[in-house]
Length: 150
Figure (cartoon, rainbow, N blue to C red):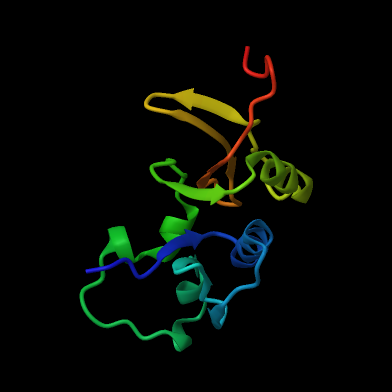
């Protein structure tokens, strides 16, 4: 078995596509109507699933097999509160520059400053959320300014 893609069930499909195109600095790689969009980069996939498409377009989607209210009700999932039980983690070669780029994009309502944690080795990162409140962490090479975290 291998990972095919990670997909996010979203409430606002177009807003999410715009967010990830800006964050990833690339256009959507492929799109299935306004139901599903995929970003493929460096051997990885992140996909966006429109949580409302099936309910709004019953004539365009065929479902067979037993329906699971818990896992198959995409609209309910898209509207559910975000519990932040997963984090999309991205790596960058220059954390300070990437932080400034993301900050200047003004694509999120929640962006932390660069933080530091140490357990086995120093780890620098910042966090933001996408339009559905999904947690994103960006980490990478960073040179700490003197007294920055005092």
